Image 1: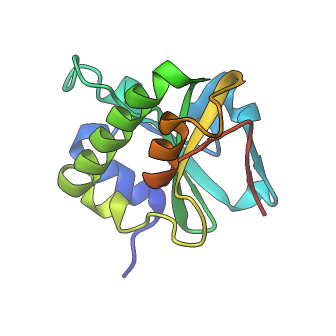
Image 2: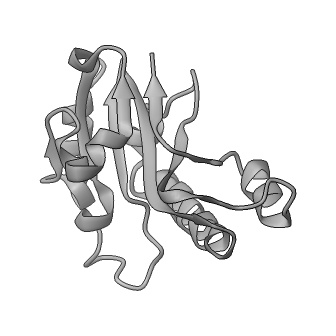
Length: 150
């Protein structure tokens, strides 16, 4: 029997108490996510806050949520040339976390689009022809103003 998103989160020891309904875990940043059918958002997790004690010095990823049975990962961060390396470190940390601690969540990772979204917190300030923009693109992540899923 396939576990629900909530069951997967609650069975992952590092984040067992961090499940929130809908996009509640994103708090004020939930406005940066536009979903075609909000009823199909089955929950979210503030990963950064949940794992701060276990990974105090790490560049931790912010959030993830489940929509239409797939998990999407959202990092809200300034989109400036000098911040690309920080976001890429966060992405590398997330991938490692998913392959070790969050294996069941990783199995639910979106394949339809994404699954990693860098949501710009204060406008877009990375030249499209810069090495940093190319580096972000090559790693499958580019800053967006809003995550929009049909």
